[in-house]
Image (tube, rainbow, N blue to C red):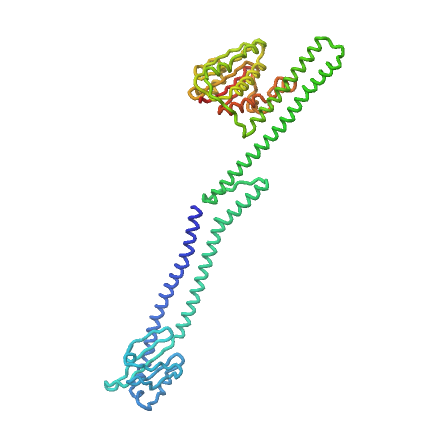
Length: 481
C-alpha cells in the first residue's frame, strides 16, 4: 500500500474510531440505564401503593387534622405534600424544598395517577374523594439518590473507558507510524550518513514497496552507481599512474641511448664512418620510438576526455575502404610475409579517415611484428560476401551482419595469445609477450587500447580472437550511415 494512502486511512481511522467508540458506549450505557429505570419503576410503584393507602384518608385534608401517621412515613428520601381542591398546600414534609403551589388548574390537574420519572426523583400525584366529592390532592416525591450516584459512577467509568480506548488507539497509531515511517526514515538517514562518510553500507531488505521503499531502492541504486564510479575512477587513476611510471621508464631507456651515442659522436673517439652511420641510425630509431610513444600518449589522453568529440565525415565505402587496406605490401615484403588484401564495401559511412587509418596501422603493425618470416597476413574490408579464409575458432565465435555493418578484418599467423590474456589485451600498456615488452622497442602497449577507443568513437565494436600456435584475428565492426 502506498504511504500516502496508508496515512489518509490512518487519519480517517483516528477521526472515526473515537466517534464510534463514544457512540457504542453511549448506546450501551443508555440501554443499561433504561433497564435500570424499568426495575426502579416497578419497585417504586410497589412502594407508592403502601403510601397511597395512608394518603387516601379524607380526614387528612380536614382543617386541624393530625399528620402523625404521615410523619412516620417520610424520611430524607421521601417527601409528601397535601393540597386542597384549590391547590393550596395543607401539609408539606419538607418546608425547605416545598414544591411550588400550582398557579392554575391545568397544572394542578395535570399528570394525575401517573408515576413521573425525573432525573433526581420520582413523583406521583393523585386526587382524594370523600363520597365522590373532590377534597384535595396529594403529591409524593421519592428521591433517586442511588440512581444519581450510579449514573455519576457510570458516567465517570464511560469517560475513563473512552480515554483508555483513545490512548490505546493513539499508541497503536504511534507504533504503526514509527514502524512504517519513522524507523525506516531513521535507518535510511543512518545509511546515507554512513555512506557520505565513505563507509560501506549493507543493503537492507525492502519489504514494503511504498514511497519510502522506492526511496530506499533509489538510494541503494545511487550508492551502487557511485561506488562503481569511485572504483572506476580509482582504477583509472591507478592505470594512469602506472602508465606514467611505465612510459617514464620506457622513455628513460631510449633517451639514455640517444645521449650515449650523441656523446660518442661529439667526442669523435676514433669512430669509423660505418660506426658513425650506425650511431646516427640508432639515434634516429630511438627518437622515432620516443615520438611514437608521445604521440600515442597524447592520443590516449585525448580519447579519455569525456568532452572530446571526434569529427566524422561521410565517405563512399567502396573508395575509402579500398584505400584503407592498400599500401601494406612493401612492409610485408620487407619481412618476406605474404599479404592477402580484399576490399568489397558498398554504401555510405561516417568516419574520421585519419583516425581510422591509425587503427588499421596499429593492427597491421602488430600483425607484421608477430608474424614469422614467410608467414601470411589477411586484411579485408567487407560489407558482403563469404569469408572462407577465417580461422575456424573465429567463425565459431563471431557472426556477421552485413545488412547493417561493414567489417575490417586483420588476421595473421603466429604464436597467438593465451586465452587467459585475451581479456586484458585492450588494457593500456598491456603486452602479452613479457620478453618483448622488456627488451623490444616495437611499441608502447597503447596501440590496441587506442584502436578500441577509436572504433567505439565510430559507434562500432572491435573483437580480438587468438589461439596459441595458430594465430590472431581482429575484427572491427562499423555501422552503415
